[in-house]
Image (cartoon, rainbow, N blue to C red; front, top):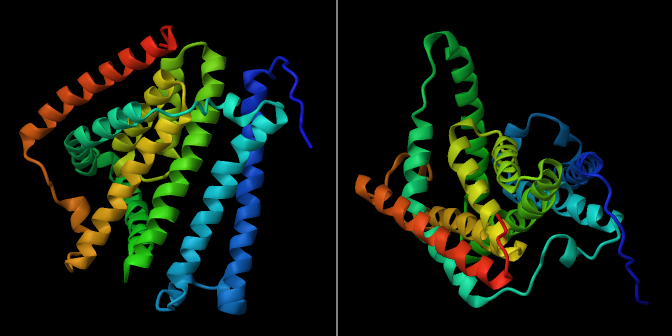
Length: 309
C-alpha cells in the first residue's frame, strides 16, 4: 500500500518543540518500564533493591547494555521519527537524509581525526576546573555525580572478547550516534532554527542541551563543542548522514580505546587522566580543524548552489 504525503505547512516551531518533548517523556517512560521488566526477568523480585548488590552478577553488564539500547531507542530515536510522522512528511525529507558522497565522508573523517588533540586539550582543562571556596559544596556534588557516571561508563565499556567489543560498538557507538543526531540535530536544532531564524543560535543552543542532558559536568565543554561541530556539519551538508558518521567516529574511538586498554591490562581511568598528544599538537589541531571546516563549508555550499549559513 502506498502512502500519499500531501505538501502542507508545518506546525509552528514552539508546538513542534512541545510535541518532541512530550514524545521524549513518553519514550523514556516506556523504555524505563521495559528496562524494569528485563531486570525483573533476570534478577527476580530483588531487582528493585540496591543495584550495587548485582554488580557481581555475570548478567549485570548485559542488562545495563539492554537498558542503554532501550533508552537510546525510546528517548532519542522514536520521538524525532514520530514528529516527522505527525507532520506527515517523509523522514528523509524532514531530516535531510540526502544520498551521501564518499568525498564528504572522507572530509568528515579528517575533521574528526585532526580535531582529536584539540578536543583532548579541552577535555583535560574541563576536568581540572575548580570552583571558588564558597562554591566547593557544589563542586563536590558535581564530582561525586561525575564519579558515579564514570563507574557506570566503565562497566558498560568492559569487554572480555571480540564479541563484547562488537556489542559495545553497536550499543555505545552506533545507536547513540543515530539516536542523538536524530534528536538533537535533526529534531531540536531544526526546531530552534525555525524558531530563531538563525542557524548559528540554533546550533549552539542545541549543543548546550546535548551536553547538559548527559549530566557529566567535567566533560561538559568538549561535548558541547562536539555537538556544535556536528551541528555545523549538518547545516553545511544538509544531510544528517554526515553528522551521524562524525558522532559514530567519536564514540567508536572511545570504545576502541577502552578495548585497547583492557587488552593491555591498563585501567580504564587512565584514558581520562592521560594525555596522548604534546601541547603544540593542540595548536596544529585547531588550525587544521578550522581549515577543514572551511573547506567542508565551501565544497558543500558550492555543491548545493547556495549559502546555507
